[in-house]
Structures are given as C-alpha cells and as structure tokens.
Image: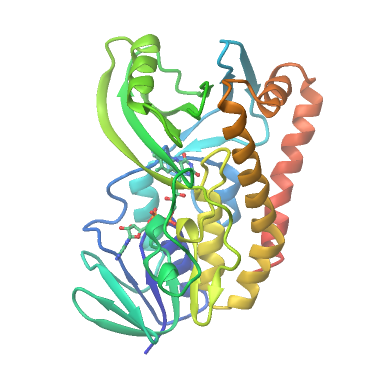
Length: 353
Ligand SMILES: Cc1cc2nc3c(=O)[nH]c(=O)nc-3n(C[C@H](O)[C@H](O)[C@H](O)COP(=O)(O)OP(=O)(O)OC[C@H]3O[C@@H](n4cnc5c(N)ncnc54)[C@H](O)[C@@H]3O)c2cc1C
C-alpha cells in the first residue's frame, strides 16, 4: 500500500508530490496524459512571490514583465509600474517538467483513473491502494465527486476560455494588458512570453468569445501570426464546504480554488497541492477554512454581483475603483499596497507547513 496516490500531474498534483517527497512518503502519481506539461491550457501568468514561496526557480525561458495596463470598455487606460511584485509569464511545459524532476516517485502517464472504491483507485490499467488519496485531477474532479466533496459544474459555474498565442512586432514584451469587456464577457488578457509572442485570450461565463477575441486581435495586431491555439475551462462555482473527506483530499481546480474574478488558479493550486502532499488533512482543512474559503467566497459573491450588473452592460464599481487605483492614486500608496500583498500570503502559508 502507498502512503499516498495522487491523481493528476498538473501544478497541484506535482506540488503534492513535491511536499510528499520532502517528507519522505512513498507515493505514486497517475495521469491520463502522455507527456508532462502538455497540452498547455493556460495564460501562464503568476506573480514571482508565489514561486519564491516554494523556492522554485525563475527559469531563463520565463518572461518577467514590469508593467501592467488595464483598459476599461470605454477605452480609458490605467497603468501600473510593478515595483515589488513582478508578473512572470511561465513556459508552463518547462515549469511542470521542472517540478516533475523534483518529485521522487513513479509518475504513471497515459493511464486514466476510472473509479474509486474503498480506498482503491481503479484505472484502465490496474488498481492501487493508498492510505491517502489526493485528487488533483482538475475541474472534473473524478474522485472528489465520487466521495461527495464536489459536484459537476453547472451554468455560470465556469469560464469558457479561448486563447491564441500570437507573434506580432507590436507586442510589448514587458507589459501585461487586461481589456475589460462589456456584458457577461469577462476580460481579454495579453500575457507576453518574450520575442514579441503573447498569450492573448478571453474567458467568460457566456457569449460569443471567439468573435470578440478575433476582433480584438484584428484591431490591435493586424496580420498576426498564430503560434498556438488553446482553451479550457476555469471552474468558479460557489466554494466547497470541505476539501477533505475521510482519506480523500481535493486540491487545485478539483477543489474549485480558482479566483472567480480574475480566473487565477495557479497560486492556490500550488499552495493546496503542497498542503495536500503533507498528508495531514486537519492542517489542510484549517488552512482552507481560515484563508482560502474567505477569499474564494468574496470573489464568488463579486462575480455573481458582476453578472447581474453586466446584464445592463454597466461598468461595475469594482472596475471603477480598480481604474482609480491604477491611475489616480499616488505611487507611494500603490507601493504600500504592493508591499502588503507581497507580505500577506507568504506569512499565512508558512504558519501551516
Ligand atoms: C485558458 C486558461 C488560462 C489560464 N490562465 C491562468 C493564468 O494565467 N494564471 C493562473 O494562475 N491560472 C490560470 N488558469 C487556471 C490554471 O491553469 C489552473 O487553475 C491550474 O492549471 C490548475 O492546476 P491543477 O493541477 O489543479 O489542474 P490541471 O492543470 O487541470 O491538471 C489536472 C491533471 O489531471 C489529469 N487528469 C484529469 N482527469 C484524469 C483522470 N481521470 N485520470 C488521470 N489523470 C487525469 C489531467 O490530464 C491533468 O494533467 C488558466 C486556465 C485556463 C483554462
């Protein structure tokens, strides 16, 4: 019997593996995909302090950005010089491969988990028994649903995302851009990867996202060259009541930890995966209740409010405040806010490990 079986080798599953490695557990990772880190279904943006939190390297292939720009639907622009926190645009394939190198266990690829019964994980190739089962299988959360921690996503519980990675000489490699769209149409992101290549995508709960995205590309980057097309689902339902049940823990997207307002899922995937991998459900549940749940709840309520506002095509008060933050507040205040953010999550997290 293994100490732990981890389902999924995405960021949360690999972080669970990293924590399990660091505490000397005997464990196994199973994933249905054929190669670690592929396919990439992500805009690859993360703030540097999350990587630093786990002593993960900033590889030379990652792009470190320095500025942020936000555009309101009426065309007004706000900009931010990121002094203390940098947004990194990862190469997610390399990021996951680098994590996998740090994990000391067998990773079974090309093997699909089908079921779970009485502590036994059943795949299309065999059966495995584990003292702890960590469901890091992303938004479908096959085992989480089975043990009643989770439920299938319904309408408005997820963003549909579409992304084009494009090359164009006008792409500014040092600036991330966010264009807020009217209606239920979320926002369009531009996360540059360097060498005038950028992940440009749109996530929204409904609507004709492809048309809006293509119009955006034609408007700002006429004649662009497509490097890669991708997409995916970002789960943003009401936060789960619990993330552990018996010997099962859900982490990452399987635990619905994406922030509903921004769609950012990587930071909480890394944190929850690491806590899950320590194989101490009490600790993980406490961290979830104290820190993750309130943040998720706030995000979810604001998303719901936003959806109602957006029926009337209004700019929400949150968007107005964000615009003021970006443009009107003095730099000294913005700097203080950044420093506070930089301090916060690190402190909270290290209480728990
Ligand atoms: C288009 C898009 C852009 C995004 N951009 C960002 C961003 O810029 N920044 C950010 O912070 N977040 C972003 N996110 C969210 C982020 O990608 C996710 O939160 C993160 O990938 C979750 O990691 P995870 O390990 O929990 O799940 P996943 O990355 O989904 O990994 C789950 C793994 O489980 C495996 N699996 C699934 N089912 C089974 C099964 N039955 N048997 C075996 N294996 C299985 C899958 O193959 C997969 O490898 C984005 C999401 C999308 C869709």
